[in-house]
Image (tube, rainbow, N blue to C red):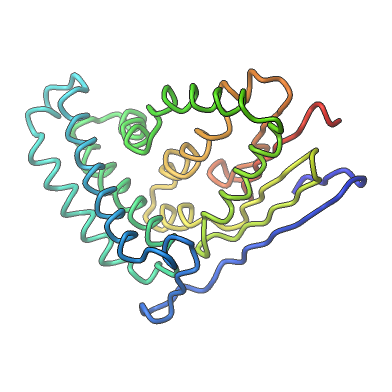
Amino acid sequence: MMALRSGGVRRAIASRARTFASSDDDREPDHWLSRSFPKQEAWLLEQAEQWWYKGLSALLKSEGQPSLATNHDLILTQVRDRNASLQRENRERIVDGRSRTHLQQACLALATYEKLSPWVGDKQESLLMVSRLLGKDSASILNPLQRMSMWLTRNKFSMVANRIKLLSLDYGSSFETSVEEEEGLECVLTVKSCFYDRFFREMEVPELTSATCCSVDALWFTSDAIRDDGSLEFSRPSSIAEGDDTCVLRLVNRKGR
């Protein structure tokens, strides 16, 4: 991890990855959604899956590739079947409520990638379609919203730093993370073990990590709203998906330096 300045106030938050549980009784509902709204969590997961299929259906019809549109129903059926199979075969990876969400996202991405590849042919195009389903296209919506929030807040660094800390909590127990903060100056999130990296490496498709986990995180921290503000600097000096030992997300308050 990059060293923070010796001055100022330092705080550290750590989250250690747990050993995979083998039964539902061993899984702790330690995310607020799991604790407070267990039934709603299941409903949200179901809705997320249905929205994925709706998005995939729209992509198959709009990509301008006749083979995708012609084989629309077949591809959708294959993705549904493969996703269901992957989730059944990998249930032991669920150690908390958040890992259930991570597993669903990873299985949907892998099933889609596998079943698109024979029709698309180009690996990068298949990866792009997966990243679009995961929200890459939502940047056009998020950027104006982030510009508004940056304009309204009095402490821009604190607002974005809180997002980084919440991201660490949202990863859950299937990640190993730590957060170091020099209050008002710098906030650094280090990911030492990543659910998606482990899953996709075991499935022999490591390229999917950057198209899923990394691309979704980037939406919140590499937006034009943050970059153009000038007072904040966000960087990702290392990435597990690129072969580094850790992922590091670093936010610096330029005005505080």
